[in-house]
Length: 204
Image (cartoon, rainbow, N blue to C red; front, side, top):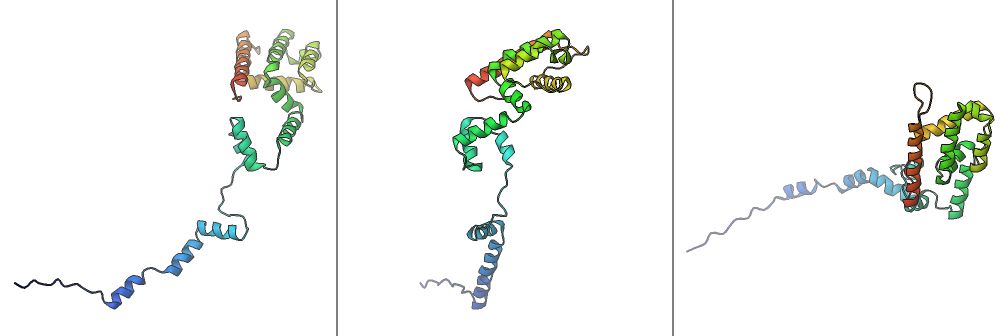
């Protein structure tokens, strides 16, 4: 009994050429080199800035830092030329650059001075306000104990005290007074900050 042979259909040369023509290597190459990835590679090879590189706001990146390990990585990325001594010098210079930065970082955020801040608030209340305390010895004592520089006018001092209390979340009541509970709340907030300094990186 004869077996039937299966016929295989051969592609015609015209159809074979047609399938090969579907892949245009030159067009594919041009498409890649004109894409963001290709342009980035060409820019890097030519020693030019990458137009598609992701841009970072260094100040926003700095705000994200939560510990000293991240801080070290930050300087490796954005200021690799700064040594540990350079960083310490820059931080010290910034803190002492104005009374505002000194009062924020060396008074309000220094656990060693929390008691002095609360005492100042209480004395201001007893004297009847910031203006009355400006020419009183209580401000001189506060300056001596914390390194705070007395503002040139009572108005500036009043603004400073307002900023202090805003930082600590203390607000005036309808009568214009600060209640004992508010001052106690501020003291509790300062105490919480003090414990955070002992256990790890400070969080606001």
